[in-house]
Image (cartoon, rainbow, N blue to C red; front, side, top):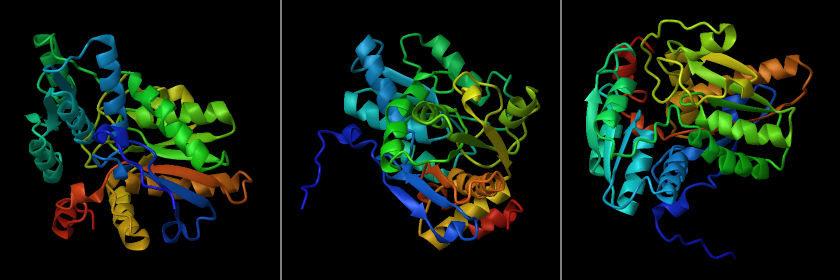
Length: 330
């Protein structure tokens, strides 16, 4: 029997999350589907990876020192990862977060000592008080604060190129037909996709974007559309940002809130996997991609996806019948 691993501090436990074969949730899809359970990272999401990577690089470059301040805009998960790193290194943590973020996430951030700057998520992207603009303005006003800017920093992708991609390649023994993942900042799908394509250029990388985000139209038509409000947290954006490498993506699908959330609830009841709305979007994408690949002649495609965060952060929203009914999603 192998002795359990021990870690010198919580950040060292980030990564090497399990890969689980999906069964009942993909019955009839004619594929082999595997999900990497990123919500089993220490702070409960895939964003622990970029938080650790970027903070460690900032210390190496001398941009951060103990006693310094981290500033970022986040839907909650990157904020949690940065909070972990702030505690580890004795840093102050200031996060710009939308008021519409789930109450569970806001409560978790406050429990970790994060100073929240809440903004109205319905404001247009050009408004100085909007989500991304507020963080940039605070960074300008406080040049001594460290602002990783996950939405435009390619180190976001590099973290996944160095960790998530190699882990998936090893866990799948190099046998992969497609990677399907949601696109938010773009770091997860692009960093992971770049690594996998370097190992096997035939692997297809398919992104899932929420209806209301600007990415889908930009990718397919290079057309910037007016963003509309949507409820999925952590996916899409209201403006074109610098992190995504669209040239690495072979196709992009558009999912509705209803499709994503019903798949999320189904995932809990069929697989016992309590994950967040972006995971439901990914599952919806896996089923769509399976049909497409089979139509292209791949008899039983092997598809990998990632489940980014835990459903425990959405008990008052996605897993609440009342909230779902109030938003016309049941």
